[in-house]
Image 1 (spheres, rainbow, N blue to C red):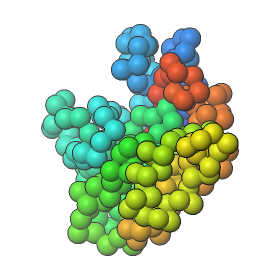
Image 2 (cartoon, rainbow, N blue to C red):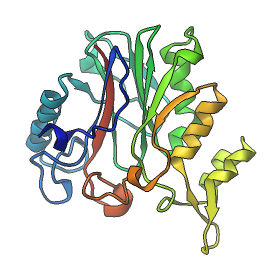
Image 3 (tube, helix red, strand yellow):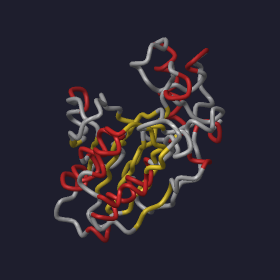
Length: 251
């Protein structure tokens, strides 16, 4: 059951515990089969509750889910205040066993760890949030006084560059402020359409902030949510879709 629920190709970071779920090992049916963790996508709430309990049991830490809105707000997770979190697309904590968690179904989950500062964080990086600066906002809020060289980052699964078709608006959102971001966009035969590499854009923005310890999604097909229907939900592929999640906690 553990192998079904958790994607195991994760880095070993002493002092932190990471997870990335798959869509396998749960109780949801139809479009949401089977480990849907999203309580906002039309699934039976009782099934979502059971799925979240299964994840918590498999991982050994309670995930803290956010109300994600494709923005750049970052919230601090404190064990005494978890019942009243504002909408946010990133979170951080310095408390043990408080799990920063991001739900996705094509967007990019990004996990952060500062071993010396003993801080973890997680960010939801769809193209809108990424272009607006959600990763930079997470770095600035989570550990502003920490040495950037101490920061480890893991990029999770997202829609890959073979399937993420976007228009000029998305390309311009990145290229207007960074001309080298054009390398992430491959022009298609459709007028004004490109195939975009979301993970590359995230790596680029993190590199610009001095992050050198990057692991995970290398833009290869095995990381593509669209290309792996047996493992991952994909809103772009299916329309109606569940959500899988990635998270990190101090232990």
